[in-house]
Amino acid sequence: MIMFWCQQTFSTLLLLVLSLFLTFPKSEAKYQPTWESLDARPLPGWYDNGKIGIFIHWGVFSVPAYSSEWFWWSWKGQPTLAVVEYMLNNYRPDFTYADFGPMFKAEFYDPNKWAALFKKAGAKYIVLVSKHHEGFTNWPSSYSWNWNAMDVGPKRDLVGELTQAIRNKTDIKFGLYHSMFEWFHPLFKKDQANGFHTQEFVKAKTMPELYEIVNKYKPEVVWSDGEWMASDKYWNSPEFIAWLYNDR
Ligand SMILES: *[C@@H]1O[C@H](CO)[C@@H](O)[C@H](O)[C@H]1NC(C)=O
Image (cartoon, rainbow, N blue to C red; front, side, top):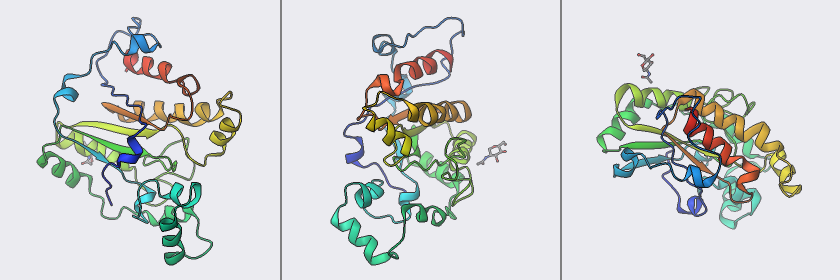
């Protein structure tokens, strides 16, 4: 069920490694929303020195557990024969990707066992996929109505439970991966059709979600992905990172 990192996904990755809790007085905005200013921030020592980190891909794509976390894209976006045939051979003809949602039950999910295993493996940090390009949020997001782990499938806060277990039982740093774009989200597709001159998706989805996971789970790494089709201006990345560095 756990898919470890897939090379393909990360080829065009924008990596934002952000250590939180290096708090500064709020009045003193240390970092400006420019890359020059943001890039001047030193990499946290624990990240630089940590030799083992564990990256966890887990989501609705774990139900077919075939191909990769890009399953939906390989089926409907840019169809590949193997995935198309896999669906034809194993699922009824009118099956949709959303139908995998209720089948994602996480019935054997024991976050305390995961924490113990990660500790035993010598991991200094972990990064959990909070949402991949399919858009399903592994936490009960207010911005992903009926396409999140509390409303559909596990009926649990997968992110919150792991955060707690890691912090209760280990001194492992806890990180979250988050995909900014979503393959088939109508607002993303609309912005895309507008040549990314509109930001409806960013304002309604990406940014609210990022603020939500940071405020709620206080991750020590925000591993941001899925930016490659549009500019940092479209995504509001420098503004978000400046907020993260200055205020969190
Ligand atoms: C972590 O500790 C808190 C406080 O003791 C407890 O309420 C919570 O259930 C624990 N979480 C896990 C996943 O063990």
